[in-house]
Length: 318
Image 1: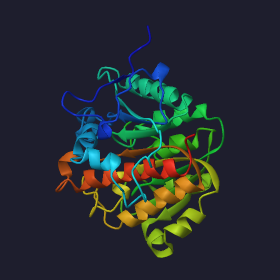
Image 2 (image 1 turned 180 degrees about the vertical axis):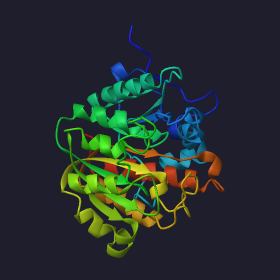
Image 3 (image 1 turned 90 degrees about the vertical axis):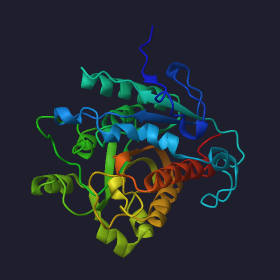
Image 4 (image 1 turned 60 degrees about the vertical axis):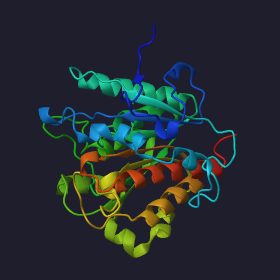
């Protein structure tokens, strides 16, 4: 009997846009699969379950116009979300956790991601803090070729460890740099102050990471940023919500002015999808209790819908 890797969202929350729930990852029939990974690896006891762990279900609950979103004309996309095509989108629920064994959660997350990627589905991960992409990026070994990592964030995320923990939210890009299936790393939106010290900046540059600060991004524009990303793919896109400006994504713990605005975010997503195959993306570090007027959730849903709609129109499926 195989271990149950995922479970339905909490008792009341629905699936994302009420797409079918699919928890049998051994017999997955999907073009696009959404997976919640609520818990990262904590740096201290109080962080074992935090507000960010509520984000996957909060995003699922946020839409009040599900039928419209799925079927009506979407001006962001130039037509309905799935463009009238037979595209199967499923929600695989949340990775199950054992709070007495935090590493078991990451093992389950990696196993779930490997099954989804192995089924040739595009994986959309909802976090959780920025540690949760680590098991997903490990699972991308299944793809077996040099992947360009595109990272949107206010912070560099190249710490080796914090309080002895090497797989927390300050470390995902360093961990990716150690995985031989990743090649070029492009980091967009760095600004303000985070956990990075001069040593981490030096390590990132020594690796060859193309660090595009928020201020350079605003000066040169998203088209120039896209030009610095190698053509042809494959890509993996990791988006920390604090990389987006807090005027449109205020529900983050580290609010820092100067991030990507909505037009820039949308253009980056569409531009990347059309440069080559994006194997998956994640959206992490949303802290729902900090939201203002549901504005973060509105933009989170729009971001995910733009990614799905762009992938459909880029002929990823069929």
